[in-house]
Image (tube, rainbow, N blue to C red; front, side, top):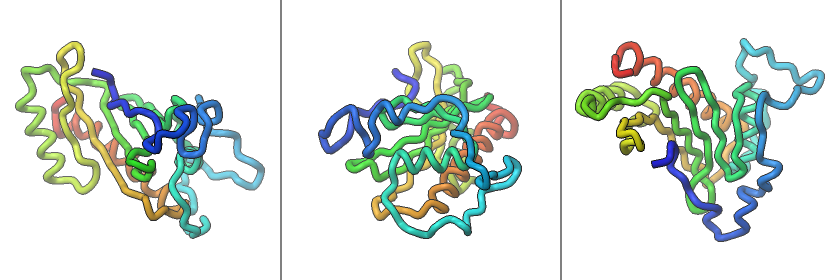
Length: 194
């Protein structure tokens, strides 16, 4: 089983080399965000000023998600198929758009560590505790890997068919990344699973 659930090209049956209006070549970004222009400086220890962003509601797109991640200084890789992958020390977060019209923002976190199959009962109890006591990110145990290990996921899905303004998109991505880190830290510490 692949690390992430794979999904085929665009749902509209269009050209598989384009997705959300972005060509494969222009979607691939590796490394840090593009350099900021003079006057655009945002110190890394401060959150972007969301109230100063325009309140124009626009459809969600991969390019807008990339811009929001750049604003948050989240480094990521893009595979050209509409999947962005941000990596941290203990986990990775997949950010993508899914749904019939790529209108659902999905953030799927996966710790690098997995659980042996004989810990399945404990893993389900720990994940259930997270779901019972936390507001964001539903957590679940994935299908066994090729080695028989159990991966753990935390996922946030937000339907954005009506569109969103930039500040809300940035806030959702910031919240999803922060909760993913909290989830993985909790699994290592309080949850005592990893």
